[in-house]
Image (cartoon, rainbow over all chains, first blue to last red; front, side, top):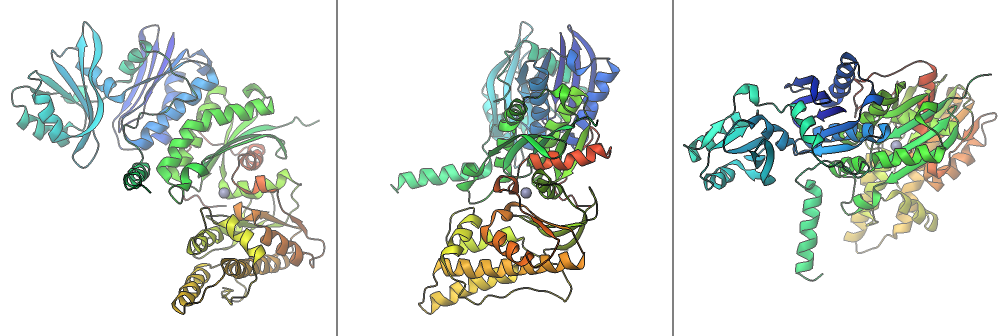
Length: 236
Length: 337
Ligand SMILES: [Zn+2]
């Protein structure tokens, strides 16, 4: 089974080809250049190197967020278009779950995170149980300081993972002096091959209705809903 | 005999997700448009992030329907054409990346189309283009006079220096408390009212084919304000008629002048505002005096954003061998050249 995995949901771009359980190739970059110009050329080059043609693919796996709205849409659009037109299944995996997979050998909780601006982070809680990655607390957007307090109550070692750690490391180190661990640079970038393997284990989704998991409503929509609620409250 | 050319077009520059298949650049095989207008209405205008989200929801559905309606397979297609810009960047990105994925999956040539070139080529789905020609492009974001001496070569000889005509329509509609989008409401009201209010016309310098509508828009708002202060009421229909008369007067007069100066064989109307009945009628009336110049006005469905026009313009690029690569990016400020 030939699997193409695509992750453009955050700054890191990751493309992987997995063939019958073997990682054939991976492309990982961590540079602030737009995914739109680089994702398709990277897919094209990797597939050419591995001598796998588009029609040979059996499964498309994509990181479906949370992350940059525009970034995740690029990956999801490429993935769903390829899956539809090649008539192969599509599987979406949480971008945080992919990052959590880097903590495979850590005994304790895993808190992958991406910066969400204004002191907020996208995060969740995961752990490995007999080699299987499990979600303990679902993905969310939360203030880093609140998250630190919340995780502290677990009274368990926690491994924080991700490039954006440098922005929030201090608050975790301070709030969880004995329990906080931080991933080294070599384990901070989500691995697209992990994305592929996680996807293989999940159920395919309906291609046409497949969309990113933004976590948040568009700002205008949230405001509009708030206004509706307000109006209902006052009975007009 | 020359082989037929089939091009799939994709357009996502604003709030319409569209796909279409066109044969030989002239014959529509299918033309699917999923409009998001209902969703944006509650915000009083297009919200870019909301538009981008809708495009992702619709993109493969719309393409599938276009392929099914045309009863064609990817193996039978010759190229994929997509709008590169101008437009909303997040929205454009969906079409561009879907088009690249399709071109890659089926090893098909990819061509990138300028949105305005698309509007102009909507006319080729009505009748063959005769060069040299002049196109009057009027839409929510554009007011341009474009001269073409041959296929694929565009020379902008006049453009708006401030608001696009469609923008002015929307702003005046808001001042008259008409619902969004305001253009069609003003057009309808204008036919009921009379152009009794004296509004300015911006001719600009002698010989210029440029436009300006911000002064007109301010004049409307001032007139409404002053009337209110005096306790008088201006009928919305009369204001709509007066405003529309001013816009159309300038658009049509400059178009006819340019058509004469450039000695063109054809004048094409293009863009969403081309749906305006007043503009169509006045252009027909004034163009009648120019002998031997054909006036082409596409049907309403081809004036507003659609993908058939993108496929039509893309067919020329395909024939000229002007292919894009997998590195193609959306360009919200793309210039027409
Ligand atoms: Zn348009």
